[in-house]
Image 1: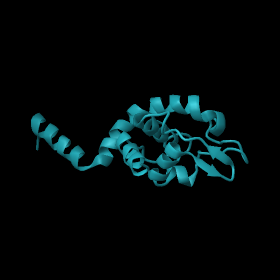
Image 2 (image 1 turned 90 degrees about the vertical axis):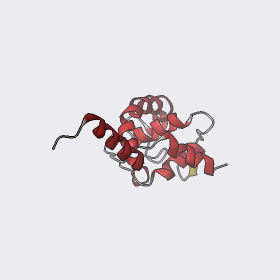
Image 3 (image 1 turned 45 degrees about the vertical axis):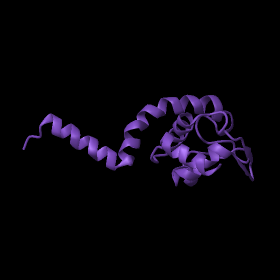
Image 4 (image 1 turned 120 degrees about the vertical axis):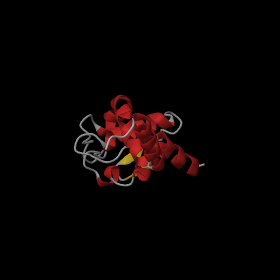
Length: 132
């Protein structure tokens, strides 16, 4: 059975509109290069280019269950910073826009040994809106 090109395109459009996860996956490749640049310029000083951090000083991101788990916590941490046993991570909500935060989070969730789904600017906007 051969599907006409127009019908195929409409079917794909409908599928994407009903499943935002597919949209996120398809845009993930666009965010990765930007996320890598943001990470290298703003995050690697503490978390290191290899994602291993500095033991006892800055946490590792590579293989971390928090980084690979629910993305909402990671997004909230990047937006609002975090104070913990190893010190304090700065807040980025006033220095990076939603696309930049989505790119950075997508990058760390898909680098080194991490293989978690990426995030979208819409997900960042949702978390940012809840913080107000």
